[in-house]
Image (cartoon, rainbow, N blue to C red):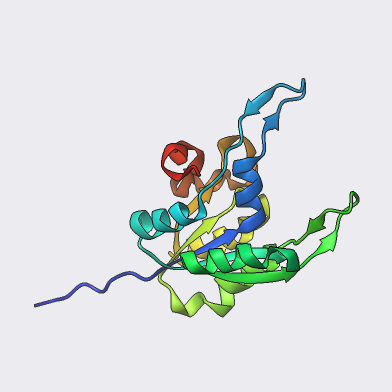
Length: 174
């Protein structure tokens, strides 16, 4: 009897894009709120990825801030594999950890041979080249975007892969 091989799926999450994409209010040019932010429950989100997309390993790319160590412990306890980027300060003195290069490197080289399909969590157009790379090799499963209002127009060619988690807000809210 022929046994079908179980597909090995990995998720690659742009931590800042996910956090800001769900939590921040988005205003139009007139200053009216067109998207109401909400607090994502990271434990529920991890379970969602496992249940809905059969993800076996979830990488969360995040800027490292020493004072957030208890948060990092909690995220690891939920099952996330954290990949840190040293942070710098922006013009207002806020920490900034741009993780795009690390996410692309992990998905296209470091972990590439270890998974069958990838779920990329970000609405950032900077990942266009990664998504195209994965799509050409039949390794792109889904692109999960925090909200429709902040999705880059560069992601238009990937319509068939897109999922907007703001539609799952009731299930994933803290």
